[in-house]
Image (cartoon, rainbow, N blue to C red; front, side, top):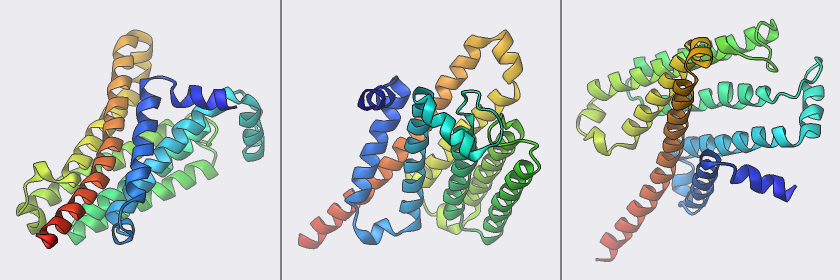
Length: 252
């Protein structure tokens, strides 16, 4: 089992990067002052980081431990087990992570009308996911192109609403966007989600006619996703640096 876990954590550049960033993120978050831990702007990104490293490792482990994969499948579903772990990505990446991204973006928007719009977006996505799965139009154990496409579209729209807020809200107009964590988080999220959206829309063409381009898009998407997680760690580090700088000023 330890050998399997080692192969999972160090199983390629993407998994090594995600796990390294994840462990660093946990460390720096834990040493944050309690007053900063309980702030929405910090604990929501932390929950997203924990979710990402957890489902990436868990889904990869299911490909190694087929017995566990089968037990979970038979417990959750009443269809024959075919060796897939797609349900883990559908649940954690395709749905739960999308809600966390929406909540983080929502927390960054200042305009109340835009906030209400994002509230409506995640409420619509939640009902949409529940409805399609209850009706078994896109069950959790199978491919979910519609849910995945709608989820990505919701993230893209929410990011666009943030950028509208960025250029109209007094709160942001007084700040340099290039030094704002919110700006870079929304930018990386928008690029990565748009890339995934375009890849999924053109999946059949790419996978049969231009596999090298599809693989390149996957690698770029992984890089952007890893960079987004790294940005979360950088936020925790900056919080600690601001605390240290404040102490130095107080002691000066």
